[in-house]
Length: 126
Image (cartoon, rainbow, N blue to C red; front, side, top):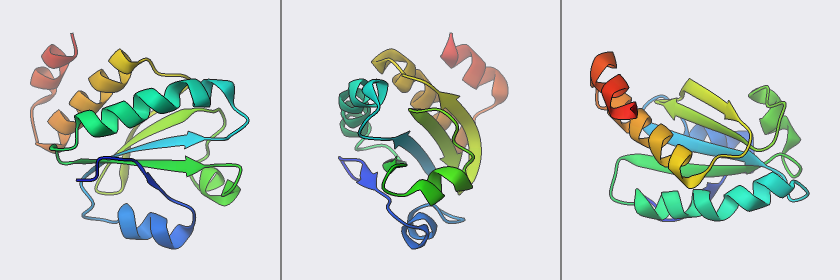
């Protein structure tokens, strides 16, 4: 997978990257004027690097440049992090995430995408 988050700027790219068999994906909805978004950006980029050898992709959507994409996902706060498996939203987390929280949520997503049981995912999250 990619080492750096991929920017999605329109619906065609959204479909291309996050279609039915796209696997695990993490999207950071952000805007340049958003202080918490700017604070989280290096941590999101670092997570993308950390998981480069795992079957998970990282994406960024600038809601100021592409407001229709934020509206499609009903994003109401920035930053918002969305976790998907094969194009299906599995979790939505509004607000600034710490590096630890990003890692925990990506680990959970990978576990779920691999078909691990709810109990095993719960134990891993402790």
